[in-house]
Image (tube, rainbow, N blue to C red):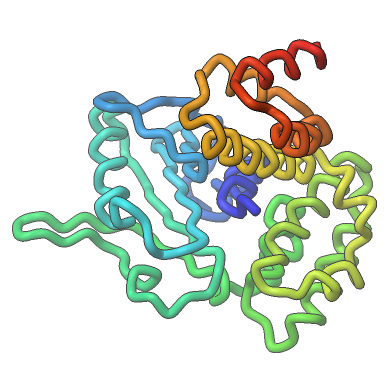
Length: 268
């Protein structure tokens, strides 16, 4: 599952709440900054930029501490690009979702011979769960926070989800919660507390499942036919989860890319 993408989804759905959490003394109006940074644009699905009246908040979500380039260097790279493009103060926060003892999860600066660049690190497993339980925007992250009784915490999360009055919001929060809880809990335990039908009806749950199905199907196609033309991949990416699953079965009978195109034409 794409845990980092789900965190990005939450931050962009509730930008003011995330800014209030990470910039408690500096938040006024908050907007999501849709940008590609100049000089070889960076595309990282798990990065969110929020703009307040006085600064940019750069949030980077990490499930695993290993990355290429390493996290400290990447944070410095983002800082330089943001500063050059917007010339405003930049606050950078790296949020680690899954508990780790790796030194990178405890590193808060990039250090080179003549350069030191600092940023904030939040390790969710060290955070007080109360803050997350009381805020629907942060509620899906609550299962990853500090607790002496993880099962009790998951029960509290489920109870608070049930109190959300808006049905669509309740479904989306439940879907996100189920995804994050999978980093810490067995699936059977999650489903003791969270209703599966509500989770699977959520927009984010369906979106994540579709993306995972596309990644899997495109890997199969590339192994079968080497590189697939980008225009064909775009058509495949627009397919529903059900059609992607059907394609995964049908491609066993394809002998060429022409068969794939003919299959897509039949759907249309």
